[in-house]
Length: 373
Image (tube, rainbow, N blue to C red):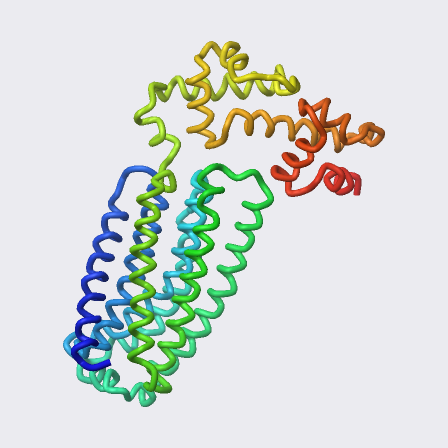
């Protein structure tokens, strides 16, 4: 690429990065919907934007004007894996909370790297300019940090991929909510992309220390990937706003008042637990609504919005719990799977097996064997 092409590309990327910073700040201060998801996505966006900005400054030569910004990107990249995981966690399981203690534990690698770089931060601008001029290898503070940084990034790769794999396995083995079913595939793609970004950055970071042969093309690809990820992620989340919705927000435009919602939730659970109408294979929404003294539309809306499942899925979840209890009882060993299915409210064995596996990850026979062990 000639200098004119490089300058044009960098100006386009710089414009995109400035917009990414704005998106990040807006997400952090947004008080509507799922605030935890908003904030973690905002911090993830700011982290990626800071990394991209540092690389743009290096490639354009403007890093000579702001040498103190050197290595800020490396520090911010440490935050990408934990923020990516916490975003995933709060989008897939919005009711879970992240305590200060857990958050500090996720931030521990960031604090370690920051403390390690203190000697470098204390260097004068002149020395930092020398470092920028490709003499990294003469500065033990940077060389030592690079090894620690690479080791921490690899460790983060392993730890967060294990955590995410466990979460994905949990989503697949249980009956996920609408937003979970819709978003799990997309979130997997996002997390693979974030892993790719972190992996590329490790390669790029080490290239600044040991070789400069492929730096320009690596930087352009790296920044483009980050900016594209930010924009496509933002577009996807705007197109599917329920990712950042909450229980309270879903009722802002509903005719059901918050007091009515809470009361209806309690009465519905009591009805299903005590009277067990789900054992009737012909149960209908209108019948349950009549018993709760609400309209079928109100009950359907309540179930869809508060539980993010359909009436049939709610009924089947109670049927599966009932069937699971029967399968655990020793006396039920003499019963066939069909008998348990009919006794639990299912009209046929095939549908029972299908729904049971969707909810538990096991077939009724496998569940029974595990319960007897």
